[in-house]
Image (tube, rainbow, N blue to C red; front, side, top):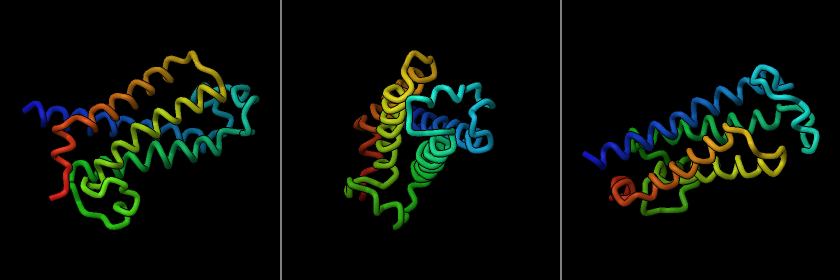
Length: 150
């Protein structure tokens, strides 16, 4: 029962990442000034970006679509050859590896964000914690065993 609960929490955590990544990415692409997300364009002054288009694309693809694919794999455990190409842990199902990637990508995204625009925003802390939680849950023995290739 505990194993099932851990798996459900992991899937929900990555689904939250996927939903908010898609929402944020689309919002930034629709309004590259960031105003529809209450983001000031001035935050980008010390970065290489002149608008939120590139960050929006990165957010949409890496923290929106990629976690969506991961949730699909975690739920169905389908074998997808194209997905397996990025699986560096060949003894585990690709979705397990992608789950680890999701946590690492989220932590990296927040780290880069803090370096580029500064920290102190509550959402940065929430998403950094979410990334660490995804990594920890992915590395629990019951999850590793569940997604071990047979």
